[in-house]
Image 1 (cartoon, rainbow, N blue to C red):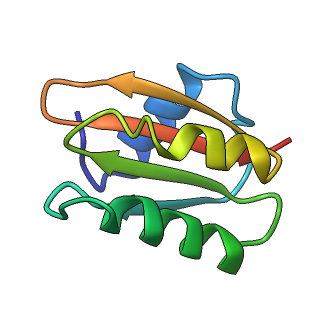
Image 2: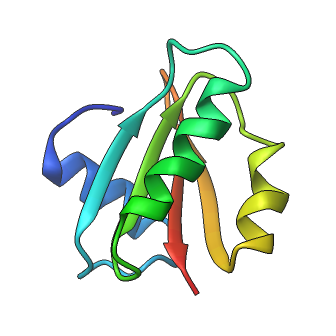
Amino acid sequence: MASNHPEQIAALISETDAPTDAPTERLDVQSLGPPKPLKQTLERLTELDDDTVLVQFNDRTPQHLYPKLEDRGYDFESVETDDATVTVIWRR
């Protein structure tokens, strides 16, 4: 399920409470070791408009990212797929 296909990303987003009509940005950090996924995700969020939903593909649950997202005013939900942990991140 974890792929570049917009319809598959839309299906993942629809499993969360994120807005389904917002622009989306995909970030694949599956091949990166800690702390690069956390760092790249936070950097990407600062570059995005507040209405853009960031969809992060990771090889593990980004537990250290969650409190940092909360501190910065983001909501998020992770969805497990066969080949990735997909974390959908959006501005509250």
